Length: 317
Image (cartoon, rainbow, N blue to C red; front, side):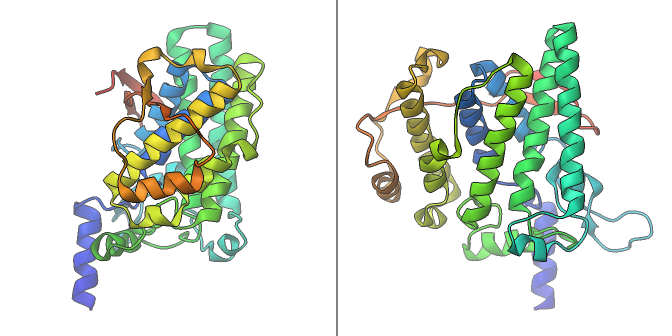
């Protein structure tokens, strides 16, 4: 058994099993859709969501295990705490009550203050660079905010939840980072993300769209539906993207706000959904008559520095 654990650990380090964060779909696609619903423009939402995703794709910010200083054994790195909101101490008690440790809340407050500061600077300078930096700071904050719920209960552990993720991959079990694995925490993450995106938007533009947690109910039911735990990651991502895009199209249609979506990003759901996705659709979106959905653009390539600030911006793939 010890030998198996060592092999699993090596897989977690060298194969890259997630020590890190909620699934890519949540950090990018869901963030983009909710940002657009709140009132951010298409390109603003794209930068925010790309920054959220970039925390997991940049060496300087990605969560990792390391051996440093006098600690001769692997442990989660400081950047795993800073950018991925793992608590440095045992947070299982807080997690049971769907709360978070004080050090996580302090870390979030610091990242939020950094985002607020960059928004103020962008408003003063009006430069493209300053505005991009502010949008990136919002995305970096949101990544930690989302992870603070997905990583709840794994604080103080030397591996974060690397071993749990590896075992999930090997045995086909739900990963702790999967939205349906712990529905209540996913719902808390979505509600708080909505609140913060609206708050940042009001600082940015003076107002935001009136979106409430109840407006997110179909999205919550989609992401936490038990059937999604039985899907492959590829199937789940495709299903979530299509159905979440339907949710956004319906929401914007009801509010006469579809003009914010480029015409080429509005599609008819002609392609067949997988049988399991069809069942999720019937359970969550049976009230929708339209098959039209909003396709999310590809993520921008962002280079983040050790402080989480943007060092470079490239086009999406």
